[in-house]
Image (cartoon, rainbow, N blue to C red; front, side, top):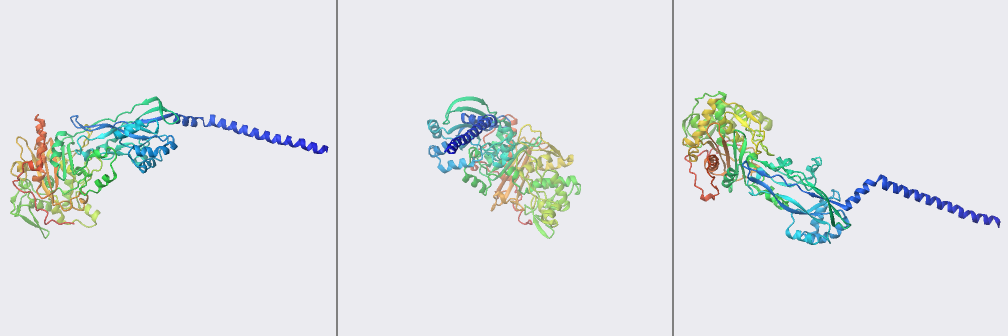
Length: 623
């Protein structure tokens, strides 16, 4: 009996000991948890609490504007609102999604897609679910601030191109930054940022972009704003001044409105681009918010290639304008006597083939001056045979053809200045001598851009100066020089002066009291497939004209090409070159520039005194 009583007393004591140990362990665990919470993880939980109480809303920096050389606005911004979704409380976001979609005129699927696209972003960072808020969207958000606290409006400065498609291919457009750009930016860019995608918007994006600011507000437990904290103002992007002259640009744009082709006007002394046109083109305002996928696909698949900047990317056969390179090579190389002449009966035999001149009756005995003025093909065929392709390549390359000019625009193409080495490297066979005959009049495999031709003519007329073309005013541009002999410059420029002022192929373009000089050309659409992206299938020829003034040491040079016309370059491209040069001198004299906006049928018809190369391509070898 006594033993039983002792066992009964021992059992509670053992149980009490176990319970005591459990209590001590729980207290120790709680103390460790409090210590970890308040000491080790205090910063982390303080930040989480701060994010629940404080919300950061970005202030978007406006992009810098673009001005022409006289300070006139070419590109600026306009105020707008985007709709932000605040994702601090995911359960609230999920709850309000149907109301949000209905109130903003979106489908539920569209809203979910926007959220899904930003899944990798931190939850406390707001996302844009509608880039451009309409008046009804703003009214909806304001009237539902209490019952839908997860919506906010963000003021932004949208890009505005007040002149529509004028300068579109040069200026470019903006768009939302891609994931690749974010990864490559070392955190300077974040998802949702608007950056320059093409043209000057891309080239000078860092200057134009500015730095975003931030405002911090206090919110309550349901996300409603109840107070404000500090604000860091945005730093606007810097404006840039361009070399473009709006008046000359307007002349060029008006003439090219219904045409395919390109125009480049340049100061050959400095490389400043005074006007640049590429047609057809696009309206960069369409990209200012977010271009619909269907419209983007349409632009990319349009056979007329409106996104292509023909002034720097259109690689075309230069036609008879290339004869200026040939004339320069003849005089500089000394391989052919300066008094060399050729007899032109309307055609000539070379390597067993007949090559025709554009004038079926021929030009008779022709020297270099007459060959330039009347654009005699037979003279230059013969000259090309005597010089050979590598000598032609040497001078063409020296004068800037077949290589990029270095203009401050992305995507410039080099064109092609063929040589024996090139054909061996690319096609793995020797150069055929008959191809030299084609190249000597700017056909065959030689291709150039309008900018290259403008720079080449300017270099010849100035004695060999090849400045880097540029659109940014006060750019520290590079200068190349390929010195040409005084006699060479005098004879070639006198020939180009005669093209317009001595009854040559550009006689109808003569300007009073201006030493307007130049060279016309007409060419096949393209060689070696380089024009497959130019949208020219089924067209006939490209008409060129490159003009400048004055005759020596010019102040302005203009190159124009009209694609797919059956007329020669003096008729199609000549008038716009003449009008730009005239406008330049009118401004210089203080005369108000006329508005060149007449419809095509209202413009005076230009009647050429002779025809430049309309059938020159018919017997040329092709590949």
